[in-house]
Image 1: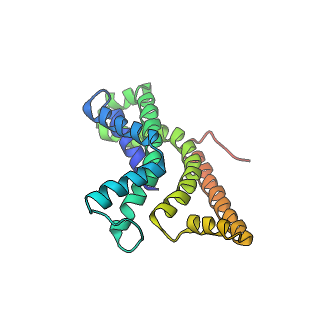
Image 2: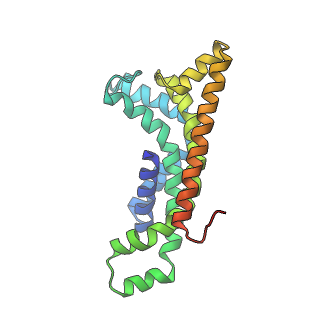
Image 3: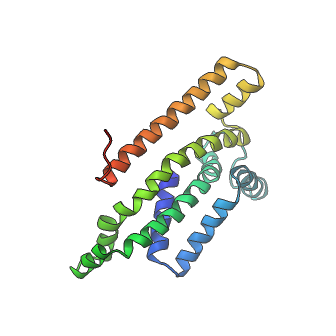
Length: 200
């Protein structure tokens, strides 16, 4: 997902630039993302960028601009979690002996990070991805109702208010299957990243 790409990317940049301005800015954004609830971020975004500045539409999904606020509001918390974990994991990996050996052999720093460090640093992040997917599903229910998107979350809320129990059961089942599939993908990725992991 977008939050994984952004979070991992920012975490790597923060780890590489440890103690510098880029590290402080990235972790500052991550703290904001962790501290502000999704619904509050969405409401503030609407007030500032839609009502005050008139840059983005308030509700609906008619144009590509309509997707910016919901995506940012939904992804920021998850990206912040992944950025902090990636930074911590990358700093731990960068201090290991085999990376010093790779540098001593004359490999460029970019190759050392992307080819040798990143794969091991992603192992803790992979564990979080499955958990964060559940949080994203829950956040989607809120975001769809705030921005008036015709999605599964909004449909589920309407079904609850209308006491349409078969539809409620269907949406819950759909969300549960999506969550189980995401965890299955995470397990496969975990086994690929760490060959010591084997499933019987």
